[in-house]
Image: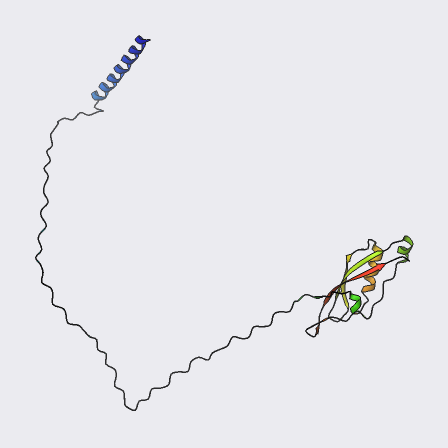
Length: 196
């Protein structure tokens, strides 16, 4: 093992020596032609020139600007200043806009409708034993007539729902007033269909 190590190390040294010789032979690593010694001498900087104390300058005389006002005749009267622009007050704010939607009635619509016809109990529903309650959402025009009606809660039977819709469409009501003016309104109206 030692002999092999020594032989390997010797081989590496020989290869490096051969490479260095080849580089020097081909002038890839140039050698200096001449070696010279350089001497450096430090130069002292010159001393700054000494300034002679200067005499203070005499102060310059102050200069005053004089503005001459034009001569005014003794009887000259100064004209009054021009009138200031009139103060324009901002226009008063408009009152808040009234809600555009219809007024909601809290009670039953029947209380505000003097002309109303009760719905007819359909004969087929009576024979079939159909009963229940229908709740309609009714919209009144500003003149008191029923403008639209739809089912808010169904009775569960189509014939009873249609009977309630047909009846309420013929009602005439007193429209509610807002600020003294008749307005559109919305109300819920229940109808009970009971078999006796």
